[in-house]
Image (cartoon, rainbow, N blue to C red; front, top):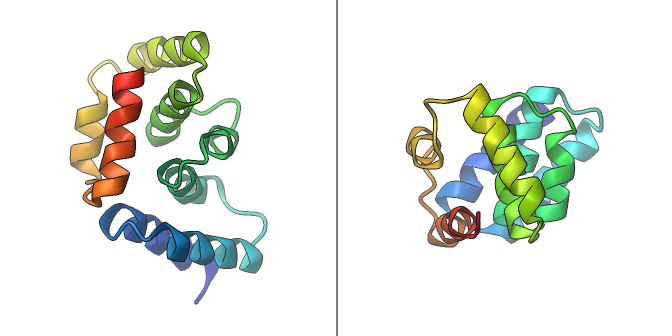
Length: 129
């Protein structure tokens, strides 16, 4: 399987099945096939590291200038889960200015998070924020 297909498949599997051990193995394999991942494929890394509980890796994967909505959402939530309240609030305020009509629930409805453990982490991050 090629990396460009494996990353999104691992992402979907993370939010549907919630088998993070398998998902992380698939993501690691995808990165070994293509170590210079395209920006749009960072999305899978961001979601998988977030749902795996590696919030520092999630934040790092979003990039310093996260501009795509999914990256902004997960950067904000990863900061909250790390207890970095000021940075999380600043990221949230920036997100609301850039994407005023989108909230965390809207995002979760568009890209459903159905695995109970993944959903719990996502909702815990929103509460912490």
